[in-house]
Image (cartoon, rainbow, N blue to C red):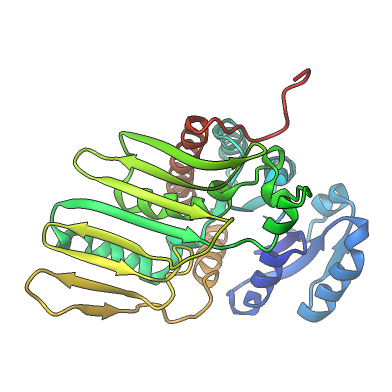
Length: 332
């Protein structure tokens, strides 16, 4: 995987901290705006990245690049991923994949037409502790209730309250609590239990964006509650309750750090921690490197099917709360 990294923000710096542990990864290039060149060059020197680009067309024309990692703000994901796929590059795109389901389906059509790998960088699905939970859910018997939380006071929230609208709180650019951190809770629940019968979202909305909210997913005989907040913090917990026991996890749904407790009725609780590596991004990028190396289109399609489901759920949830993401329609 000869990778071009788009962006130089926090998520990119986090990825670069473990890039040397990804088998077969070559850091071919990093791209950003001219104004960010000093930071791009600093990262290039620190991590041994081949080239710095501030011209995206030139980056995509580089034959030494076969994969693009889109680590840009949410509202830019679709356009930059589309151009990369049309240039014949595999694409790893940060969450949320796109701002709506139609955009994702457009990207998928291009990837399928050209036999390219297209995947969403969603750490949850590739965590060893998540896999361990999946293996043990059946032991809980008939599921009755699920609660999945991710609340984290945003350092950008005071600026938002003061009137400055940064991308994280700008609905035009795909901001808001559900699409930022709540999306992990949707991935967590849907990855275990599939499509619900319905989803609704009750949100605290300021200036058209959700700063926190509660999504309720209704399944045939149980409900799941997904809680997310960027305007407040508090203890984080995921709990899956069945008639024969419960699973409780106190790590965030995008890290599962610290493992989880399996408490079966009539038995002593068992603490399980299956993760051998402390960094949440290691599993996903090792999987992506293997997928691209083997051009594993079946794995791509499984991943895209799941991402489509989650984006559909997120879109329905936001619509139920009266929230619209993306630029306002012309003339609005």
